[in-house]
Length: 386
Image (tube, rainbow, N blue to C red; front, side, top):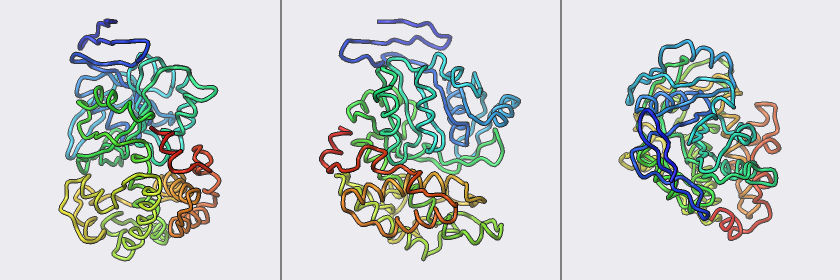
């Protein structure tokens, strides 16, 4: 047993040759590194600090970090309310990684690989590294960096959430609006068996987390690839005209909801081919927000209060288009192709996004090849994540 004195509590680790990961036996106040200071990262830092946990907040954006350092507190309002300031706010990876137990990556998905490479020299045995969320293949991508041929050589729990735990938006640095509570967010680890250890540590802190079978379930079941790039691209004329609109309530009309539903059928087909018993989007949203089930996606979205008054993307560089195409539509479609599943609707939106953004998302995105899944059978892929 190793005992560490802390101003808030005492931390006890039990280590063995078989399992060099922390098991928490008493009231422990963990120390968190939060990488990414968007709305989700700022929220997490403020909420955890308010609860008494030590947090360090990092972002690559020096101007944003400087503004956060100037503020007295980060304010969270709406369905969650608190005010707090992290112990450290920094643009230094080394500083954010100093003396922490849990590394929460709350960045855009396209940064996962580079962040894993940056934190690799500072990782220690027993730490948790968790993506919030991982999107399609996030845990697989960072595991290649941290456990591959040139990995860190440390015993880690690598995890990913299926969605960001907070329904939140920020229109001003340091001021975050929480529009809804998520009561069921799937989480998985790589390998899958580590999820029990993960939830022993993080479950009491984040009660919305629920264990998923594996990272295929958390990654390929995500709703972001359906709800973000498709409505954004279908409303591209409004972006061109600089028109503001309520993203979900106005941007997803009945026919656009029908298009999303058609794409969602392809997503479910890819999941089923992988052996993942995926929920369709209507069932997933109903479960996540504890809603009364509706017969169609349009009516369901109109009933989600936390989706109201959220404004639209104003640039083609927005994460709803770039991130959710590269790390959502592309891996879903690419893995589908590898398994012989036709995905013509998703293919169309990847092609549209590429044309509109002037980029080749089939090249830039998380393809089956990049995730190490190309040419593998569903059984072989299942074995990889077991």
